[in-house]
Image (cartoon, rainbow, N blue to C red; front, side, top):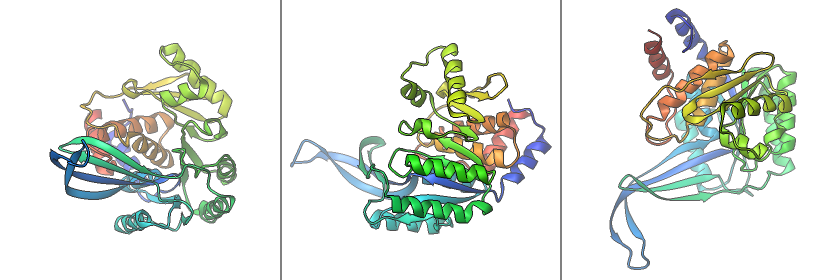
Length: 331
C-alpha cells in the first residue's frame, strides 16, 4: 500500500494538474457498431446486425494522451493519421476533447489506423482493422522530430507508446531518447516486440510478461524467472527503472542498485482489461512528473489500471476517481 498521509496525497493530486506530457507513437481511432441480431442473412450464413448505436473513441497512443488529459494533465500527442474519413473523425474528437493537435502529422500515403468493433447483444462479433504497418518515410520522421524539438522546452515528460504500427522506427526512437535525455526530461516507454531492445537509456521501461517472454525467447513462470528477466532488462537497456507488469500478480519493480520490489494488485471484479496498459503508463508518468517516487507512482498506476478494468470498453481514468479511491484505501 502507498505510504502517504491524506494531506500528502492531496498535495500530489494537485501537482498532477497542468503537467504537459508529450505522447509519441501509434495514434488510433476505435470505432464501435452496437446493436442486436434477430435473423441470419439470406446471402451467407452470417448474422445481420441491426445497428442501434455507432460511436468513436481514441485508441492506441491517443488513448494514453486522453488518460493524461482526464488526469488533469495537458497532453501533446505526436504521431500520424491519414487524409481520410477516419482522420477527419479523429480531428473532430480532438476538438471535442480540447486536445492540441499540432503534433499530429497527416500522411496521405497511409490510412488512419482504425479498429472497428461490431458488438451484437453485448457479444463481440468481429473486429475490422484498417492500418498500414510499414515504417513511416524519412520525411515524416523528420517532421515528427522537428515537432518534438520545437516543444521539448515546454513539456514535463515524454511517453513513447509503441504498438508496432510503423510510426516508431528504430532511428526515430534513438533520436527521441537522445533529445529527451539532453533536455533532462522523464521518458517512459510502453514497448512491443519490434524494436523492443532499442529503448536504451530511458527513465522507465514498462513491458508486460508476454512481451518480455517473446523478446528474450523464454518462459516466465516462477518468482526466480520474474527476477532474472527484470534484472536482464535493467542491464541490457541501461534504464533507470523497469516495471514488469504481471497481470493479477501486480508489478515487479526493478531499480539500479536497489532490491526488487513488488506492487500487488488489489482484488477486483474485472469486466474488461482493454486499455488498462494505457492507463498504467499515463498515470505512472503523471505521478513521476508530479514528484512521486517510483514505488508510489507504480502503486498509483497499478491502482488506476485496476479501476478501469472494472469498466466495459476502453475508458480513461479520471483524476478524482483515482485519488478518491486511493484515499479510501489508506484510511
